[in-house]
Every structure is written in structure tokens, then in C-alpha cells.
Image (cartoon, rainbow over all chains, first blue to last red; front, side, top):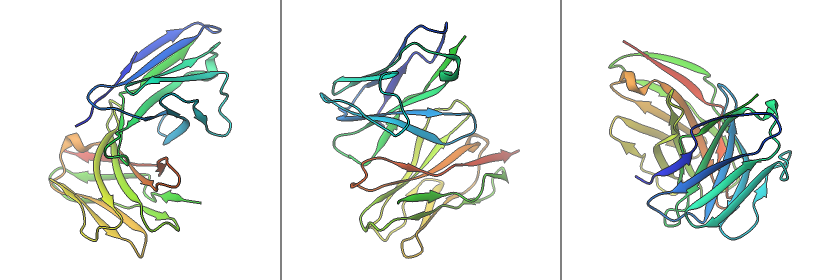
Length: 116
Length: 114
């Protein structure tokens, strides 16, 4: 099956610093990638949808200046949490939609962000 | 608005037995896709099974099968011969091209007991 690689798996940072999370589709091209946030024992909350070569579409209530998304190629999207604060601590998951079977999303293993 | 409802927050089953997880959805679309994803303790989201709404035949993947009732807007997942490795959160999800994003249920936590 299609593989999505997400790095880092765990990051601890100080309040006020920025953190970048990478999401790569390893064996397929993804015109669309998604970034989710998941709270403990909860469902996935979509933060934004990114399309290769264009600006990301953010869900209501998500600060686009705080969560910067770049989708520079068909295999790479990045999420940068700028000026992180303890309330940004969470589990972030990326997902990529395969071009051929456009209705299937494959997921990265997630990133646990802890802001001290 | 399109919604997905999973009415069972938690379930348990004995190893080797069969369990059914329920999912209902609401949509006015005629062409759409339904999914079951599994999230084990590792938190890696894994696609279990997919159903295309225009197909009447229920999808099957080894021990996993669905009961898709389009008129009732129901999409249940049956796990046969449950294994300890099936212990996970199971999410039902819906996709229609007009919305271009997955709509998620709240999940069912399944515990397989030895």
C-alpha cells in the first residue's frame, strides 16, 4: 500500500519557538495533503487542506499565521507551528490523497508536539 | 450538512469471536465513498476497508466485511475471528467529491480480550 512518512515523530520545544513537521508521500504523488490535529481519545480535526503549488485552505477557527503550510511538490508538505505555546501541544497527523485513486487518503504516523 | 455517527463509544469482544461496529451517515449525495479506518495504540491510522456507494456488493477484506445499506444510510463493520491485534480505535468516514474532505465519526474503541 501507499506510504506516507511524517517526521519528526516526537518533538519537545520551548514556548515561543517554531517547529516544522514534514510529510512525504514515498511511493505515490499527492496533489492534495491534509493536516489534522487529534486530542486524546478524540476524532481527527481537520486543520487545513493543501494543494501542490497553491495556498492552503484552512478550516474555520484555525489560525493560518500560526500554522503555516507549504506544499511545494507532489510529494512533500510541511506544517510549521510558529511561536508555539503550551496550548499547541497535541498530536498532529498528515494525510495524502493519491492522485489515481483520489478518494483514498493515506496517513503518516503522526507527530507528538510538546511545548514547555 | 454531511454527518457521520458512531453510536458505540466502546466495545469489547473475546478473541476469535465476531463483533460488529455500527456507523450511520447523512447525506443528500448519491455518489460517495465510505471508509473504515483503524487507529491502534501506535496511533498510525490504517485503512481497513472502503465501499463505493454505487456498488451494491458489500466490500470484504479478509476478516473484515461491511454491511452497506444505502437506503438506511448505514455502514457497519464486521470483524470475524477477532485477534488481539484488532484492539484499536475504529473510525468511520465519508467522502463525497463535492466536499473534497473526509467527514469523520467520533470513533469506537474496540478491545479484544484474550
